[in-house]
Structures are given as C-alpha cells and as structure tokens.
Image 1: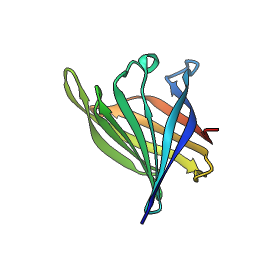
Image 2 (image 1 turned 90 degrees about the vertical axis):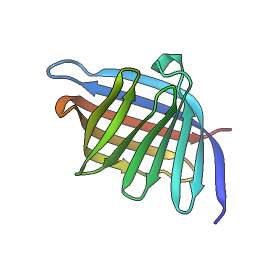
Image 3 (image 1 turned 60 degrees about the vertical axis):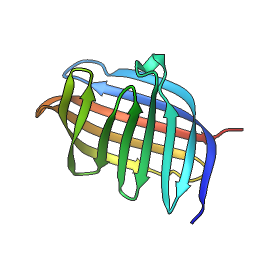
Image 4 (image 1 turned 120 degrees about the horizontal axis):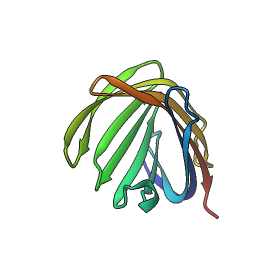
Length: 144
C-alpha cells in the first residue's frame, strides 16, 4: 500500500491542570508532516527551544482508537492514549527511567489528509503518584 506524506501546519495547545490553579497552557505553531500509511495516520514535527526539547522529533501515531506519542532524539519516550484505559510506559530522563501511568479520559479526532482536530485529555501518574491532568488540542492544516 502506498504512503502519502503531506506538509502541514500544526497548532498544538497543551494544558496542565493542578489542584485549584488556573491551567498552565502552552501553544506551539510549527510545520510538520502528516503521513498516511495502511489506513493509519502519523503526525510528526521537530521540537524547539520553546518546548525545552530541542533536537527531539515528536510523532503522534493515530491507529484506530489508540494514539501513541513517540519522542526520539534528545528525549526518548512513548505514551499510549486510549479512551477509558490506562497504559504504563517508561520515560527516559538524563537521571534514569521513570514509570508513567497514563489514564485517558477523552480521545477524539477527525483527522484525514485534509487535516482536522485531535483532542486528548488524560491524567499522568509518575511512579504511581498522580501529578496532574493534561489536555492536548492539535489542529492540523495543509500547508499552502
């Protein structure tokens, strides 16, 4: 099956919620690629100084009801999001590996080769201690 690789503009908004505190939000506009392969969709972009992960490639692999966030380069990690389920992964840091539990409460998207939106709401527990609730909103537009 052929692969389609399209240049896209990504608008990525990340929100972190801690108890009784206004959400800490970051917004990133960046160029990336949208790849269609065997019915699955892959969004990839380069992290920048802004995110503190320069030299890292981030890929969202959208495979049916499951989305996997894969980071490779200066930071290596993998997080699996699946609505209503918990997934545990290892997070590499310069100081060693941490166990991260991801509990996804909401995962919706309407992504296609024309772009679209994806929203993921989840909570993270590091070493089995909940550290906060997070939300990703990603808007994808074809690059003109």
